[in-house]
Structure formats: C-alpha cells, structure tokens
Length: 184
Image (cartoon, rainbow, N blue to C red; front, side, top):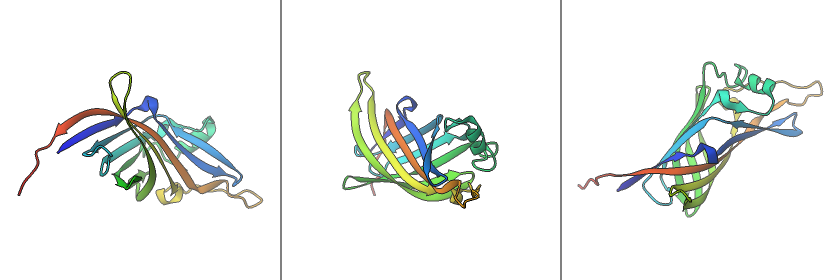
C-alpha cells in the first residue's frame, strides 16, 4: 500500500470565517498564516488523514481595532493560545465528502463535521500535482470558549454565536511512501 503525502499551498488557498454583527450584517475575517497536510492511501482521498493549524495573530477582518479585540482574552486569547488546530479524516460516501475530526480553539476541543467539495487532481504547468477542496461548516463560538457578548440598548446581539467557516484549499503532492503490507 502506498501513502501519498500532501501539503497545503498557502499561495493558492484561503481560510475565512463569517459572523453576524448586530444580526443585520455579516463580518468576514481571514487567517492569513496557516499550514496543513494530508496523507492519503487512495486517489479519491477517502480515509485521508488531515491536519491543519492557523496562527491567531494572523486574523484580518480589515479593521485593526476589531482584529486586536479578536486576538484579546475576550475572544481567541492569542497570548495563551497562539494557534487553532484541526485533526481528522476525510470520508467519501459515493462522491459526498465530509471532513470529520477534532477542532481545537483556545484549548477547547470539539468534534466537528464539515462539508467538502472535492475539485479533483491535476498537474500544473510546473509539473506539480495539485488537489483542490472547498470545505465549509458552522460552529458555535461559545463552545470553544469565545464567550464575549454584548447587547445593544435595543436588545440586539452584537456578535452572533454561530460562525461559518470556509477553507479553499489547494494541496501539493509531496511524495509517495511505500508501505509494506502485513499478511497474517
């Protein structure tokens, strides 16, 4: 059996999140520094082991004061928890992909299930083999210890609990390792 190792190409990938603000609009943020890898024993990535991390200090919502607040102890507490982590498996059920695993934010670990659109595998003009994925899901920020909350005078929630996640990932094939099969 062969195991193919892949790593995320940060120049062709993007990690974003969206959260409702005042219940009437959506704020989008990005993690600008991240890394990830996959190990697969099949061409369709079924059962592939996936790992990912993002640097909290790389949060970018296009507003520096909000970014500083998100990095503070009110939210991600970047001083004590500089990264978020994910580790899991990719499952292919007849072309319907799910990424199931453990997400850790601020030291809090929860099982998550994310929807995956597998774009396929191609060779780029430079001879590298690339695989593409669009990954989406929703989490409750409060389950991960991001519990800061405020309410306006009119009773509107300032920041919703639900956060939508999106990862557009292009993986680069690194190498194939031959694994000896064990026979009984």
